[in-house]
Length: 306
Image (spheres, rainbow, N blue to C red):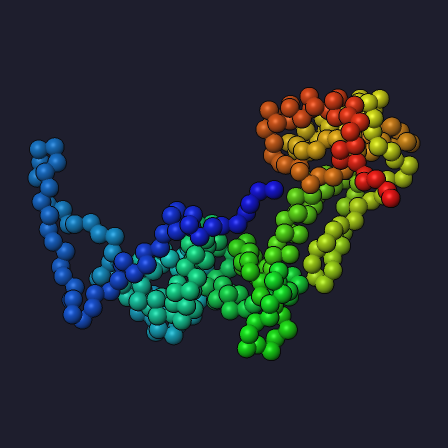
């Protein structure tokens, strides 16, 4: 299973913030006019204004002419990548955004969240929503956390959620984070195969206290596990799957169910399924099918009853 979390070191290296480098001049250090620099290029003299990464100092945009209360409301409704780019328009706008309480608090206490939002181009939520989410502690799925520690000084019965899901800007506890990732791939696979007859029908997720703990699929009446003699039927089913660009990832014989009614094969257990797969991946999987059907080790089959 791929690790979809973002680490602090990687964020700081690959998505730096200016962290105050582009700041307003203080009263003790008034603005100085940009120096004229003389450069020699290919034998010609050029008098160019020194380039600067700093925001423009003389701009007079319509946004700057708005009352602070109005511009603040606008900033709160912008997504983080837009906030960061807007902040560079002028020193006046930079000062206005930096003075926003939500932005300032996030910048001080959660700079990696800003880095992640910029790096992922997260535009599905605004600054106000992000701030509200960060100030909450409940898991949006179940209200519990992996360590079960209640928030000190709070009468709320909810518990801390340690993860921030950047797609929807919601807090998630460890258990819900792991379970959602575990079942996500298989759920997608059943969606890809919906109506094809190549797999059982996906019926629903099974939940407990708002947390996904499993899922229910259609029961195939009169089906049995595949064997070496079912190679043609299994090969045909796998070829149909590969035609959709899907690699199953675990083609042991227990993941092929043979319908007794017509001898056709149905695929199950898509935990390791992947789409889109390369032609090389699909070819390698197809070449393994015969040996997998002949395997008598029991790998991938039901556990021994006691």
